[in-house]
Image (cartoon, rainbow, N blue to C red; front, top):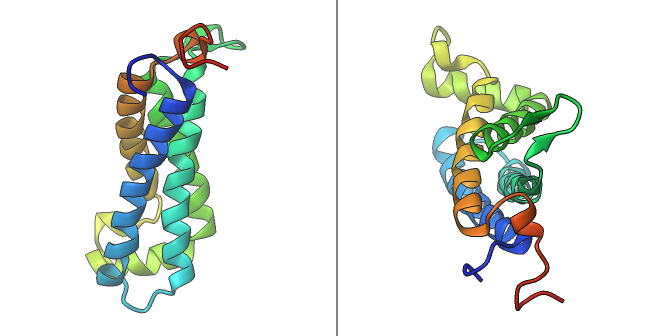
Length: 150
């Protein structure tokens, strides 16, 4: 599976790392916010699995066609992770705000729910690194000439 660059390898690695991060969030959430509901915890778990899959799929795009700029993994993956968590912050703003105020205090610098965007960039960087390291990127990940190709 790790011998040749492959899109499926990228997606599998991205989802596996997303699963690990999601499970950490799933099991750690009661310590930060004991009164949260299970739906929120399941949403966090599935969100990071989805983020890993999206970062894995987007690894084949190494060049921006409109801006005509190269997009390496260390730029692309954190951008996707940050963007996905930016969108997530709009859906869970109230819950996340209550959790951060309860954890860090009302006058803390870390009380803004938009800190989840920076966390998404770091998780995206982690996923992008391992997906690129073991699954390749660009045309190499889409090459269908290797022995496992259909």
